[in-house]
Amino acid sequence: MYIKNQSYHLVRIFLLFTLVFISVNANAGDFKVIIDAGHGGKDPGAIGSFSKEKDINLAIALQVGEMIKTRNPNVKVIYTRDGDYFVELQERANIANRSKAQLFISVHTNSSTSSASYGAETYTMGLRRSNENLAVARRENAVILLEDNYKVKYEGFDPNSSESYIMFETLHDRFMDQSISMATNIQKEFRGNDITDRGVRQDVFLVLRNTGMPSVLVEVGYISNRNDENFLNSKSGQQKVANAIYNAFVQFKRNYDKRQGTLSIEQRPQITEKKDTAERESTRVVTSKNQEEVIYKVQILASPFQLKANSSEFKGEKNIDFYKEKGLYKYTIGNTSDLKEINRLRSELSRKFKDCFVIGYRNGEKFIVK
Image (tube, rainbow, N blue to C red):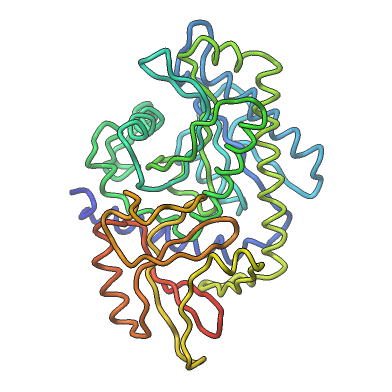
């Protein structure tokens, strides 16, 4: 498999260093948001009956950016492209990383072999995929075929090979919760703007893979559906989509500002959980009688809604606990003070939950174990 390739491991180490570097410098300067209009130039993206995806993406991206700049003078908006020209996927991520941005929003338009598909959905980087998700990821990633020397640049990644998707363990654990929260807000705002909500989804998107910050990819509608195509090419339709994304951004920025007042930027951030009564009642965290003893758990997934005990998301695992943090339900397995034991459990669970990681509690404070 490609994962054994030495160059892949070197790139992985570089990316992990990049994530730490960006996190440490997250407070430097004003808040920066990257607005990425998908495709462009020689890459038209999906083709509709009378329009091209690249044009829809750019029109909406520019509107979102303009709304942010006009209403939030302390926020710096950076476009990956502001005209009809081609930008490689890796360069889009490089733009975000060089600027040390706090949020990455990629705007795309969906397409399907069936003209019956319609509505909007938002993706985060991850491995919780379905065949439908994989089809979208393959189409969006296929743009690398237009790039020179793409096999070397993307470490042998083949956008048409299922094996290439299996090899990834997401590097976005640190930003997953914030990405899901942003995606959930976007979909909520779509519903409020009378846009059909197709939900929050996850898969491997190359444009999100190398960004060291919370990142989302928004599929604003189906160009293959006549009604969606008409809507997305109209001024009112583009305004509704831009409003939805902007309102979700405002919520993200508000939560970001709150976190900045309570969290220090460290390689291993310690997060003090502050819960209201209702949230405390829905949270099950086992604490030790010895306040100096650390309790370790394996966090397997996070969800914007509470899952049933027999949910297929748990893949047959039992004795699952959960806690609620920042509007997300976070599910854990295990409860021990033995670090070796919890690492052994994490290794076992990683076969089913590739994104799982260890968290610990000390004196009521949660921290992530790297």
